[in-house]
Length: 415
Ligand SMILES: NC(=O)c1ccc[n+]([C@@H]2O[C@H](COP(=O)([O-])OP(=O)(O)OC[C@H]3O[C@@H](n4cnc5c(N)ncnc54)[C@H](O)[C@@H]3O)[C@@H](O)[C@H]2O)c1
Image 1: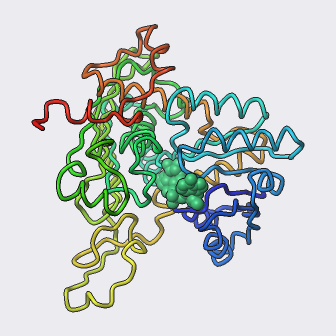
Image 2: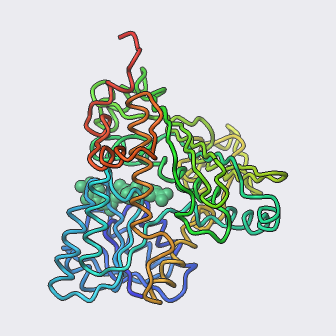
Image 3: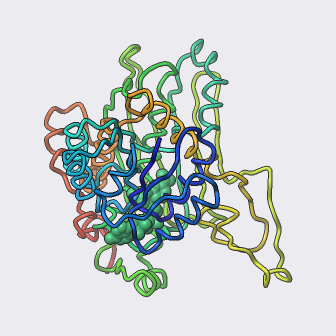
């Protein structure tokens, strides 16, 4: 499979590394941007191809079988329009991959689904946490217990770090919100997956209600607000985004009628060594727990050695410390599920199928995300069984995404 990249930044580099562990795929094309030369160099050095840099999306599409959209969230629709134009002009593209979130709103996500259908493209919505080997292994090991005792009734999932690496992530309009948009989609998706009985489809559980709280606990306060303005050019005094979000999604098992719950927690104000993904859950008589900050490898760097520090992010994504006792993860691309989601995509697209998670699935995750923002904004539980709610969510744009976050995040504050 010849794979083309639109985007040559952080996640593109991670995916290129992941592709070293996937067969029958080569990176052949990338859209030219300021960082694309480094991306080409990275692909060549890890041995996944030497992509040619092209000046237009149409040229990328003409020089690959499958194209991956790995540029910022606010470019989704114009990027997909150009892809579809190229296909309608004769490019023999067969599939399209997109990183989370599918869209910043239901309207955007639905437009993307419709565009892919119009161009008859197979789709992959990349939600890596569902593909984490630790998640798959615990489900396999617990399968007999789940089959005997019943599926998990409570799952908690969290993704937390100290804040994103590029300016556009901090801008609530460009990103589409704050940490709930950025990482809540992961925690919501993996929570639903972990509650789903093995052998049932992704859409098996019926969402009943969503409650959520969004807050600005660190980056709206001095001196962090000033630091953000100085370093990122984003003013959280005027247009804030949430740096902490938590909520509960209630689902109904349609076979048994049982109610099950998934609690999600996401933050950009996490004060530990770096990124932590944490999931735990329980059913009758059994439980599981995953924590990516635990590693069999760790290093210690004392003050005396601190002058010769390596790039801390080589040891762990979003590392916030360069000395002390630090975990080292030897294969992060695999740990976080990037390898297996790429493998699933390559294998299924090659068979002429959608990936395990297609864009319709991404649309459903967008619906739950929108319900979460709506709940936090209105301060109430959103009843997803109410027939009117779908119409509301279909046209809903969160206040934080509109740049009006103070109305939600500073409610009840003194000044
Ligand atoms: N699954 C995950 O864990 C994960 C992790 C990080 C990012 N992502 C997703 O991947 C996508 C890209 O994120 P990233 O971290 O690689 O971002 P990034 O800022 O590191 O890279 C963005 C890329 O898009 C290009 N670009 C094109 N037009 C741009 C513009 N107007 N402004 C800024 N960049 C522009 C940049 O040159 C760069 O190559 C996002 O949708 C994000 O949600 C997913």
